[in-house]
Length: 333
Image 1 (cartoon, helix red, strand yellow):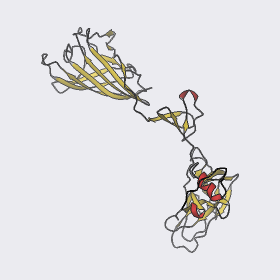
Image 2 (tube, helix red, strand yellow):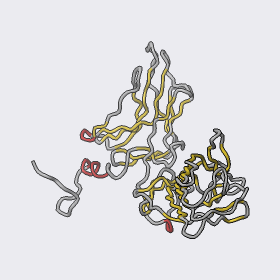
Image 3 (cartoon, rainbow, N blue to C red):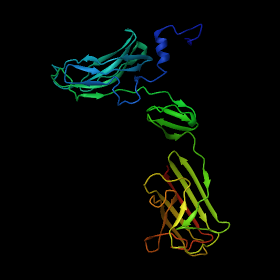
Image 4 (cartoon, rainbow, N blue to C red):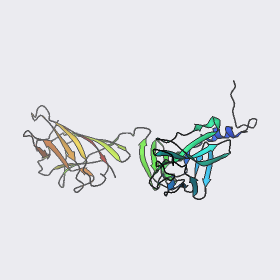
Protein backbone atom coordinates (compact mmCIF):
# COMPACT_ATOMS: atom_id res chain seq x y z
CA UNK A 1 0.00 0.00 0.00
CA UNK A 2 1.15 3.55 -0.68
CA UNK A 3 0.11 7.15 -0.20
CA UNK A 4 -0.94 9.14 -3.26
CA UNK A 5 -1.07 12.93 -3.34
CA UNK A 6 -2.09 15.55 -5.90
CA UNK A 7 -2.09 18.04 -7.54
CA UNK A 8 1.63 18.55 -7.98
CA UNK A 9 3.64 19.21 -11.13
CA UNK A 10 4.74 15.57 -11.07
CA UNK A 11 1.30 14.23 -10.12
CA UNK A 12 -1.50 16.47 -11.44
CA UNK A 13 -5.21 15.82 -11.13
CA UNK A 14 -5.54 13.28 -13.91
CA UNK A 15 -8.90 11.56 -13.37
CA UNK A 16 -12.50 12.58 -12.82
CA UNK A 17 -12.54 10.59 -9.58
CA UNK A 18 -9.56 12.52 -8.22
CA UNK A 19 -11.22 15.81 -9.06
CA UNK A 20 -14.56 14.75 -7.50
CA UNK A 21 -12.81 13.58 -4.33
CA UNK A 22 -11.04 16.93 -4.05
CA UNK A 23 -13.85 19.27 -5.10
CA UNK A 24 -16.55 17.53 -3.06
CA UNK A 25 -14.86 18.96 0.05
CA UNK A 26 -14.99 22.53 -1.25
CA UNK A 27 -18.65 22.89 -0.49
CA UNK A 28 -21.72 21.02 0.74
CA UNK A 29 -24.04 19.24 -1.67
CA UNK A 30 -27.29 21.08 -2.27
CA UNK A 31 -29.16 23.80 -4.13
CA UNK A 32 -27.48 27.15 -4.73
CA UNK A 33 -29.66 29.52 -2.72
CA UNK A 34 -29.39 31.88 0.23
CA UNK A 35 -33.02 31.17 1.15
CA UNK A 36 -34.55 27.69 0.95
CA UNK A 37 -37.89 29.48 0.52
CA UNK A 38 -36.75 30.49 -2.99
CA UNK A 39 -37.88 28.63 -6.11
CA UNK A 40 -34.39 27.47 -7.14
CA UNK A 41 -34.80 23.87 -8.42
CA UNK A 42 -38.12 23.65 -6.57
CA UNK A 43 -40.45 20.82 -7.59
CA UNK A 44 -44.17 21.51 -8.14
CA UNK A 45 -47.08 19.46 -9.42
CA UNK A 46 -50.46 20.32 -10.96
CA UNK A 47 -52.35 17.04 -11.01
CA UNK A 48 -50.84 15.71 -14.25
CA UNK A 49 -48.44 12.88 -15.02
CA UNK A 50 -45.50 15.28 -14.88
CA UNK A 51 -43.82 17.33 -12.17
CA UNK A 52 -41.96 20.55 -12.89
CA UNK A 53 -38.51 21.55 -11.64
CA UNK A 54 -37.90 25.29 -11.58
CA UNK A 55 -34.75 26.92 -12.92
CA UNK A 56 -31.75 27.00 -10.64
CA UNK A 57 -28.39 25.46 -9.93
CA UNK A 58 -26.78 23.12 -7.44
CA UNK A 59 -23.64 21.32 -6.35
CA UNK A 60 -23.32 17.53 -6.13
CA UNK A 61 -20.14 15.59 -5.34
CA UNK A 62 -17.88 18.46 -6.40
CA UNK A 63 -19.70 19.22 -9.66
CA UNK A 64 -22.13 22.00 -10.63
CA UNK A 65 -25.47 21.57 -12.35
CA UNK A 66 -27.48 24.42 -13.91
CA UNK A 67 -31.01 24.51 -15.30
CA UNK A 68 -31.89 27.70 -17.19
CA UNK A 69 -35.64 27.07 -17.27
CA UNK A 70 -38.50 24.91 -16.03
CA UNK A 71 -37.88 21.19 -16.58
CA UNK A 72 -40.64 18.59 -16.88
CA UNK A 73 -40.11 15.13 -15.37
CA UNK A 74 -42.49 12.19 -15.90
CA UNK A 75 -44.27 10.57 -12.96
CA UNK A 76 -44.09 6.79 -12.76
CA UNK A 77 -47.64 5.40 -12.78
CA UNK A 78 -49.15 3.79 -9.69
CA UNK A 79 -52.20 2.55 -11.62
CA UNK A 80 -51.82 -1.00 -10.34
CA UNK A 81 -50.98 -0.04 -6.78
CA UNK A 82 -53.31 -0.79 -3.88
CA UNK A 83 -51.86 1.93 -1.64
CA UNK A 84 -50.37 5.36 -1.98
CA UNK A 85 -46.71 5.43 -3.02
CA UNK A 86 -44.07 7.88 -1.82
CA UNK A 87 -41.44 8.79 -4.43
CA UNK A 88 -38.44 11.11 -4.61
CA UNK A 89 -37.24 13.59 -7.18
CA UNK A 90 -33.45 13.68 -6.92
CA UNK A 91 -30.42 15.17 -8.58
CA UNK A 92 -28.16 12.27 -9.53
CA UNK A 93 -24.42 12.65 -10.09
CA UNK A 94 -23.36 9.73 -12.28
CA UNK A 95 -19.70 9.53 -13.30
CA UNK A 96 -20.45 6.86 -15.90
CA UNK A 97 -22.79 9.28 -17.70
CA UNK A 98 -20.61 12.36 -17.15
CA UNK A 99 -23.63 14.27 -15.89
CA UNK A 100 -25.91 15.39 -13.11
CA UNK A 101 -29.54 14.81 -14.06
CA UNK A 102 -32.93 14.92 -12.32
CA UNK A 103 -34.40 11.46 -11.69
CA UNK A 104 -37.84 10.32 -10.51
CA UNK A 105 -37.29 7.46 -8.01
CA UNK A 106 -40.20 5.28 -6.93
CA UNK A 107 -40.63 4.13 -3.38
CA UNK A 108 -43.36 2.38 -1.43
CA UNK A 109 -45.13 3.19 1.82
CA UNK A 110 -42.02 5.27 2.55
CA UNK A 111 -39.77 7.22 0.22
CA UNK A 112 -36.76 5.43 -1.32
CA UNK A 113 -33.29 5.93 0.06
CA UNK A 114 -30.57 8.05 -1.49
CA UNK A 115 -27.54 6.59 -3.21
CA UNK A 116 -24.34 8.04 -1.79
CA UNK A 117 -21.45 6.08 -3.22
CA UNK A 118 -18.74 8.39 -4.58
CA UNK A 119 -16.53 5.36 -5.03
CA UNK A 120 -18.94 3.93 -7.62
CA UNK A 121 -19.62 7.33 -9.12
CA UNK A 122 -23.29 7.78 -8.06
CA UNK A 123 -24.36 10.42 -5.55
CA UNK A 124 -27.95 11.67 -5.09
CA UNK A 125 -29.45 14.63 -3.28
CA UNK A 126 -33.23 15.11 -2.82
CA UNK A 127 -35.35 17.87 -4.33
CA UNK A 128 -38.85 16.72 -3.36
CA UNK A 129 -41.00 13.88 -2.05
CA UNK A 130 -44.08 13.15 -4.17
CA UNK A 131 -47.07 11.01 -3.24
CA UNK A 132 -48.95 9.13 -5.96
CA UNK A 133 -52.34 7.88 -4.78
CA UNK A 134 -53.35 4.23 -5.18
CA UNK A 135 -54.44 3.55 -8.76
CA UNK A 136 -53.29 6.99 -9.90
CA UNK A 137 -50.91 8.16 -12.59
CA UNK A 138 -50.59 11.76 -11.38
CA UNK A 139 -49.18 13.82 -8.51
CA UNK A 140 -51.70 16.24 -7.03
CA UNK A 141 -50.62 19.83 -6.45
CA UNK A 142 -50.69 19.34 -2.68
CA UNK A 143 -48.82 16.03 -2.75
CA UNK A 144 -45.30 17.48 -3.03
CA UNK A 145 -43.06 18.00 0.00
CA UNK A 146 -39.96 20.15 -0.48
CA UNK A 147 -36.78 18.21 0.40
CA UNK A 148 -34.13 20.56 -0.98
CA UNK A 149 -30.89 21.25 0.87
CA UNK A 150 -29.24 24.64 0.68
CA UNK A 151 -25.56 24.62 -0.22
CA UNK A 152 -24.67 27.48 2.12
CA UNK A 153 -21.57 29.63 1.90
CA UNK A 154 -18.09 29.49 3.44
CA UNK A 155 -17.47 31.37 6.66
CA UNK A 156 -16.48 35.02 6.18
CA UNK A 157 -13.70 36.56 8.27
CA UNK A 158 -12.79 40.18 8.93
CA UNK A 159 -13.34 43.25 11.06
CA UNK A 160 -16.55 45.08 11.93
CA UNK A 161 -15.21 48.11 10.08
CA UNK A 162 -15.01 46.26 6.74
CA UNK A 163 -18.02 43.99 6.43
CA UNK A 164 -19.24 42.60 3.11
CA UNK A 165 -22.97 42.70 2.29
CA UNK A 166 -24.99 40.42 4.55
CA UNK A 167 -25.93 37.08 2.97
CA UNK A 168 -28.73 35.06 4.50
CA UNK A 169 -27.47 31.99 6.38
CA UNK A 170 -23.77 32.87 6.13
CA UNK A 171 -21.60 32.86 9.23
CA UNK A 172 -18.99 35.55 9.84
CA UNK A 173 -16.19 35.69 12.41
CA UNK A 174 -14.89 39.02 13.72
CA UNK A 175 -12.20 38.47 16.31
CA UNK A 176 -13.90 36.17 18.83
CA UNK A 177 -17.44 37.19 17.82
CA UNK A 178 -19.65 34.99 15.61
CA UNK A 179 -22.33 36.63 13.47
CA UNK A 180 -25.09 35.32 11.18
CA UNK A 181 -26.29 37.09 8.06
CA UNK A 182 -30.00 37.55 7.39
CA UNK A 183 -29.64 39.24 4.00
CA UNK A 184 -29.76 42.73 5.51
CA UNK A 185 -27.71 42.72 8.73
CA UNK A 186 -24.96 40.73 10.42
CA UNK A 187 -26.53 39.55 13.69
CA UNK A 188 -24.49 38.60 16.76
CA UNK A 189 -24.79 34.89 17.61
CA UNK A 190 -22.12 34.30 20.24
CA UNK A 191 -18.46 34.51 21.06
CA UNK A 192 -15.57 32.10 21.01
CA UNK A 193 -14.21 33.63 24.21
CA UNK A 194 -16.02 34.84 27.30
CA UNK A 195 -16.29 38.63 27.31
CA UNK A 196 -14.37 40.41 30.05
CA UNK A 197 -16.02 41.98 33.06
CA UNK A 198 -16.22 45.76 32.96
CA UNK A 199 -16.73 48.19 35.82
CA UNK A 200 -18.81 51.31 36.29
CA UNK A 201 -19.84 53.52 39.19
CA UNK A 202 -23.59 53.27 39.88
CA UNK A 203 -25.38 56.58 40.43
CA UNK A 204 -28.08 56.47 43.12
CA UNK A 205 -30.99 58.88 43.01
CA UNK A 206 -34.34 59.48 44.68
CA UNK A 207 -36.56 61.78 42.69
CA UNK A 208 -34.41 64.76 41.70
CA UNK A 209 -31.84 64.11 44.46
CA UNK A 210 -28.53 62.31 44.03
CA UNK A 211 -27.83 60.12 47.05
CA UNK A 212 -24.45 60.32 48.77
CA UNK A 213 -23.66 57.18 50.76
CA UNK A 214 -20.72 58.75 52.56
CA UNK A 215 -16.99 59.01 52.02
CA UNK A 216 -15.45 55.54 51.68
CA UNK A 217 -18.69 53.82 50.67
CA UNK A 218 -18.25 50.71 48.53
CA UNK A 219 -20.37 51.45 45.49
CA UNK A 220 -19.38 48.90 42.86
CA UNK A 221 -20.93 48.02 39.49
CA UNK A 222 -19.70 45.12 37.37
CA UNK A 223 -21.14 43.96 34.05
CA UNK A 224 -20.63 41.70 31.03
CA UNK A 225 -22.25 42.11 27.63
CA UNK A 226 -23.18 39.02 25.59
CA UNK A 227 -24.48 40.29 22.25
CA UNK A 228 -27.71 42.10 23.15
CA UNK A 229 -27.78 40.86 26.76
CA UNK A 230 -26.11 42.56 29.71
CA UNK A 231 -25.41 40.82 33.02
CA UNK A 232 -24.92 43.29 35.86
CA UNK A 233 -24.10 43.05 39.56
CA UNK A 234 -24.26 46.06 41.88
CA UNK A 235 -22.94 46.02 45.44
CA UNK A 236 -23.41 48.89 47.85
CA UNK A 237 -22.01 49.20 51.39
CA UNK A 238 -22.78 52.68 52.77
CA UNK A 239 -20.28 54.63 54.86
CA UNK A 240 -22.93 57.03 56.10
CA UNK A 241 -26.65 57.47 56.62
CA UNK A 242 -28.17 59.81 54.02
CA UNK A 243 -31.12 61.98 54.91
CA UNK A 244 -34.61 60.53 54.67
CA UNK A 245 -36.18 60.81 51.21
CA UNK A 246 -39.73 59.70 50.45
CA UNK A 247 -39.07 59.09 46.75
CA UNK A 248 -38.27 55.53 45.53
CA UNK A 249 -34.57 54.73 45.33
CA UNK A 250 -33.16 54.44 41.77
CA UNK A 251 -29.78 53.25 40.51
CA UNK A 252 -28.15 53.69 37.09
CA UNK A 253 -27.38 50.81 34.73
CA UNK A 254 -24.19 50.51 32.64
CA UNK A 255 -26.06 50.33 29.30
CA UNK A 256 -29.54 51.50 28.32
CA UNK A 257 -32.45 49.05 28.34
CA UNK A 258 -33.99 47.97 25.02
CA UNK A 259 -37.70 48.31 24.34
CA UNK A 260 -40.74 48.59 26.58
CA UNK A 261 -40.32 45.28 28.45
CA UNK A 262 -39.67 45.42 32.20
CA UNK A 263 -36.48 43.71 33.31
CA UNK A 264 -36.30 42.08 36.76
CA UNK A 265 -33.31 41.71 39.08
CA UNK A 266 -32.83 39.89 42.37
CA UNK A 267 -32.05 41.93 45.48
CA UNK A 268 -30.55 40.93 48.82
CA UNK A 269 -30.03 43.36 51.68
CA UNK A 270 -28.05 42.33 54.76
CA UNK A 271 -28.23 44.65 57.77
CA UNK A 272 -25.15 45.11 59.93
CA UNK A 273 -25.52 42.94 63.04
CA UNK A 274 -25.34 46.00 65.28
CA UNK A 275 -28.43 47.47 63.61
CA UNK A 276 -30.66 44.51 64.45
CA UNK A 277 -32.79 44.77 61.31
CA UNK A 278 -31.88 41.38 59.84
CA UNK A 279 -31.88 40.66 56.12
CA UNK A 280 -34.38 41.22 53.32
CA UNK A 281 -34.86 39.78 49.87
CA UNK A 282 -36.69 41.43 47.02
CA UNK A 283 -36.77 42.35 43.38
CA UNK A 284 -35.68 45.38 41.38
CA UNK A 285 -37.16 46.40 38.05
CA UNK A 286 -36.76 48.77 35.17
CA UNK A 287 -39.74 50.93 34.25
CA UNK A 288 -39.24 52.09 30.65
CA UNK A 289 -41.99 54.69 31.10
CA UNK A 290 -39.80 56.28 33.80
CA UNK A 291 -36.28 55.67 32.43
CA UNK A 292 -34.37 53.26 30.17
CA UNK A 293 -31.03 54.00 31.84
CA UNK A 294 -31.70 52.91 35.41
CA UNK A 295 -33.46 50.55 37.79
CA UNK A 296 -36.49 52.59 38.84
CA UNK A 297 -37.90 50.44 41.66
CA UNK A 298 -36.30 48.29 44.34
CA UNK A 299 -38.96 46.38 46.28
CA UNK A 300 -38.14 44.60 49.54
CA UNK A 301 -40.17 42.06 51.45
CA UNK A 302 -41.51 43.30 54.76
CA UNK A 303 -42.17 41.44 58.01
CA UNK A 304 -45.91 41.58 57.29
CA UNK A 305 -45.45 39.53 54.12
CA UNK A 306 -45.97 42.39 51.70
CA UNK A 307 -43.37 44.29 49.67
CA UNK A 308 -42.48 47.95 49.73
CA UNK A 309 -40.53 50.36 47.52
CA UNK A 310 -37.09 50.96 49.00
CA UNK A 311 -36.29 54.50 50.08
CA UNK A 312 -33.15 55.75 51.78
CA UNK A 313 -34.56 55.00 55.24
CA UNK A 314 -37.52 52.73 54.50
CA UNK A 315 -38.59 49.95 54.90
CA UNK A 316 -35.29 49.70 56.77
CA UNK A 317 -32.81 52.40 57.64
CA UNK A 318 -30.03 51.66 55.13
CA UNK A 319 -26.79 52.89 56.71
CA UNK A 320 -23.11 52.30 57.45
CA UNK A 321 -22.06 48.64 57.24
CA UNK A 322 -25.25 47.33 55.62
CA UNK A 323 -24.78 45.43 52.33
CA UNK A 324 -27.10 45.45 49.33
CA UNK A 325 -26.54 43.34 46.22
CA UNK A 326 -28.56 43.62 43.00
CA UNK A 327 -27.95 41.10 40.22
CA UNK A 328 -29.60 40.15 36.94
CA UNK A 329 -29.67 40.32 33.15
CA UNK A 330 -31.51 42.55 30.74
CA UNK A 331 -31.82 43.20 27.02
CA UNK A 332 -29.84 46.18 25.76
CA UNK A 333 -30.34 48.52 22.84
